[in-house]
Image (cartoon, rainbow, N blue to C red; front, side, top):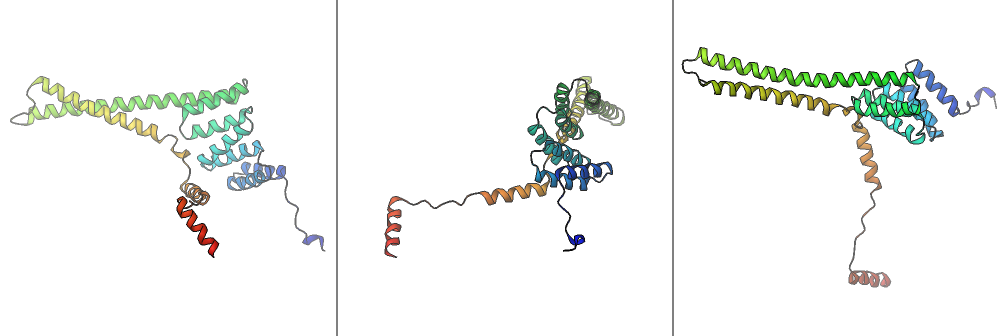
Length: 242
C-alpha cells in the first residue's frame, strides 16, 4: 500500500492539549474546546484538561460549562490552587463576588505567596465594595426623589388650587414622608433585582436542560402492572392451558 494513502496516527492526549493551548493563544476558543474535549474522552481523569477547557469556555461566555469544568478540576485535584482559581474566575464573571472571594481565598491557602491570587482578591474586594456602595446610592437617590416629589406635590396643591387638599402641616409632612417611603421601596426592589440577576449566567442552557430531560425520561423504568393474588393465579392457569 502506498505510504501516502495511510491515515495519520491518532493524536495523543499531550498533542491534543498542545493544540488546544495553541488555539487559545490564537483566540480560537471553539477549536480549543474541541481539542480538549477529545483529549478528555481519552483521559477522563486529567484535571489539567478540565482546567484548560474551563478557561476556553469562560472566554466563550459559557459560564455554566466553565463552572462545571472548574468544579471537576477541583474534584479530581483538590490540592491544586489553579482549580479554585478557575472557579473563582467564573464566579467573578457571573457577579457572584462573595463566592469568588471564597474560591480565591482557598487557592491562596494552597499557594500563599502567589501574587496573582493576591491581586485577584484585592480586585474582587474592590468590585464588591463598589457594588454595595452602588446599591446604597440607588436606595438613597430613590428615597430623595420620592421626598422631593412629595414636597412639590404639596407646594403645587397649596399654591395652585382654590381648595387645597393638604391644609394641615402634619398631613403635608406625612404625605411627603409617604412618597419618600415609596421611593425607598422602589430603590430596595431595584437592588434586590440586581442581586437576583447575579449568577443568572450560571444557569444551564435551555438546550442542555431539554437534553437532560430526555435522558431522564429514557432512563425511567417502565412501571409494571400489579395484580392481586387471585388475578395472578388466574393468569397462571391461563398460561398453563395455552
